[in-house]
Image (cartoon, rainbow, N blue to C red; front, side, top):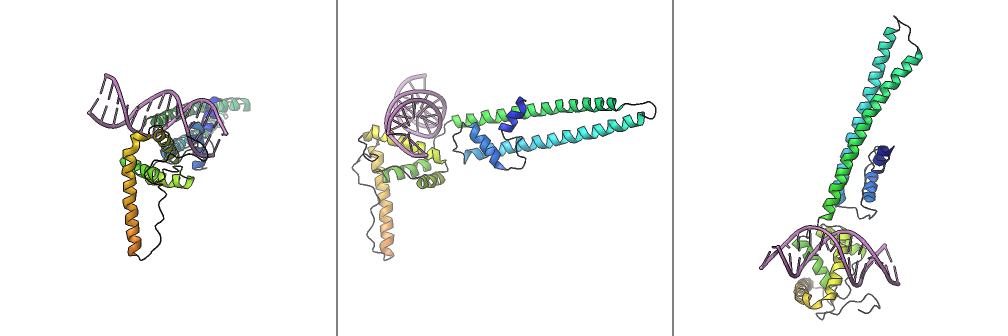
Length: 243
DNA sequence: CGGTATGATTTACT
DNA sequence: AGTAAATCATACCG
């Protein structure tokens, strides 16, 4: 039936103690397959797990109640069997009725669980749709990286992960940011000149500090220029592609 | 309120 | 798979 499939797909009625994996898969599926799950999704997963737990405990309760009630009725019938003949067919019929009643109750449980999941999902999607600007600190870090790698502002996967961690955002958000930044910078370099100078100066200062520290440590290495090709905004081209 | 900045999504290309 | 470019939707600010 429909509800069962839905709950199964949502990881609610799947492997009972499978842990987050099923829920994570469900979350990934819910978000349309884009598997950028990591941070924001933990909240979603936690709530889904909660729903699943409630669902299972309730289901078990109903199951137990059904069994109890069945045995109770059986006992009653057995008692009655002393006064009047009771065919096995009648017993079967009674049990059938009871089970049907309880399964209809379970259906209600499934339905409300489904509703809860749907609400949770829509909230989750809404939260995703809402845009929040990154913190000042995060943009600071991202800009620092961008302008200090202006000649090749394409962070590797590891670099993205590190930036994501530093900024407490997801890796795909870092990718988005760099995508937007690259295109917007290229589109109007002039508008970003001030910002570029600012961050160039900032990294220069930190580099100077590093050099000073190195000198103080008597490490007379030649200061490896931190890749910032220099102030001229030499527009990056990704290997052979002219702007 | 209107304009701009900005994060996210979509589309197309390689 | 990763990116450019266009576009969408919202946040932010005067």
